[in-house]
Amino acid sequence: MSAPTTTDPVARARDAAARESWAEAYELLHDHDRHPERGLTADDLSVLADSAWWSGHVDESVAARLRAHAAYLAADDHRGAGLTSWWLYYEYAGLGRPAAAAGWLHRARHHLEDLPDCPEQCFLAMTAAEEASAHGDHESALAATRRMTALALACGSPDLLALARQSESRVLLAAGRRAEGLALLDEAMCAVSAGELSGMVTGWLYCLALTQCMEAADFARAVEWTNAAMEWCAPPWTGRPPDGNADTGTAPEAEDPDTEEDPDTEDPSAALAPLPMTVPSGENPFRGVCRAHRVEVLDLLGAWALAEAEARQACREVPVDCLESAAAAYYAAGDVQRRQGRLEAAAVSYGHAHELGRIPQPGLALLRLAQGRADAAVAGVDLALACRNDPDHDVLGRARLLAARTEVALAVRDLPGAAKAAADLAALAGAADGDVPLLRALADTALGSVALAERRPGALLPLRRALAGWLELRVPYEAAQVRMLLAAACRAAGDEEAARLELGTARAVFERLGAVPDARRAAALLGGGSRRRLPGGLTAREAEVLRLVASGGTNKDIAGALVISEHTVARHLNNIFAKLGVGSRTSATAYAYAHGLV
Image 1 (cartoon, rainbow, N blue to C red):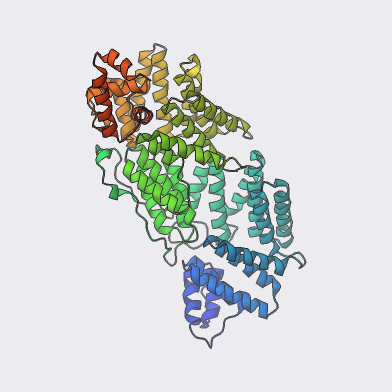
Image 2 (cartoon, helix red, strand yellow):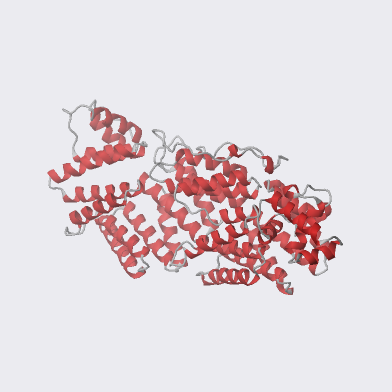
């Protein structure tokens, strides 16, 4: 569109807003609004509120919208007042002010509910669907989304129709109707990719779709829409779909993960530090939120260096009303750091995620296990699972907790607990509407690891299914971990050659990813155990004692096995506990399993 020829700044601002040039609209209206004698209409104040939000000035957006509501009331415009009230509800909810949000939602209903059918009522229907779904009332939620669809069709709004499709898809997914829900989500996203929607609804749908795909464990869709979202967010941003030649918005390549740096000596200051979360004027405020989703995808794909760099960038870009996205980025970075053996840095990242409102599980439990704090690991993952006993649409979140519960239980030799967690995980995967490769791979890994620990001959079959699943998904770290389990199963079956092939492949993957503890464990199992540095500063004799403790031996059993006195065994145990920072045989056993000594 050509630029307007008028010199009236308000008219120019309206034109800029129509082109979704929000920074330009904000500057014009903000400057005009400094002069009290130059009044702005209710519609102009709404444009000022929208442009302030897009430009990263959330407080100014709320203030302008409050003035717009008063102006609509003065003009007896209940539709305008109702829509403005709903936006105030949305903004206050994002700012963490639930009481104010509830008040404005009540006002929106007061303004709109008794009017004849109108487009503004779509937002009330969308909110009603969210509330009903949160209470597990899927029938009421579906009725609300279908009313939203009818209103959208009646007014012919592509924005509202796409939101209605997405809202209904979310309800269907929460109700377990996976195939129907994903089909509706795909339909809504067609309008996004075709460039048929406004910038606000485009951003909403990208963020909502990415969340839905990961919660539903649909990794293929998550990868596809994450890439598309980052392309849409790429600068220079205009609010419209890119022409295919824009910068993808990726962060610069981070430090090569294949370094020989010892994670045990890492400076904890290298962890992600809290960063000011502001959106520079003129940039897309959805950029940080979409990037935070991308971090989780990169983590699974094994692009760990880039994932950590992107997490840092996401925390710089996330608006103050979307802090849950920054929490997700910190958590994903913690997972990367933990698996690389950078335990102090991981603890810092998990701490930042917790500060921003995310329960950092199961990552924190697995960190405690790696630190030899088995009791804390068990308590953390059990509490997180208990908090998810209510109906929950986040299927992948629960699956990851059950997978971690299996791992922790095996580390502390709780075979019944591990078997139950693995069975629950298999039931979750089996209950899904249709085949879900990510859930199936998690379940097969857990079932195979339990069968191996129980010395059952059937461990190879689920482990081979798990490996095929992870390779199909192109998730390298989990595939390499399954290869380690397969190596143990092959050795138990007497196939040493197959075991060494699996270990060699796993070691190469771990080294490429920078997963130092796992790479050392694979190297030790390949025959390098006598030459490697033992974890925690243990001596070779102390490592022998610890292995026997982990196998369930008493002091008398260990003394007999090593032909030493029980007094010497007790002295070794005191040294082991001091070096590892643990206070019990259970915690020492967990440390031994976590560090590949058993």
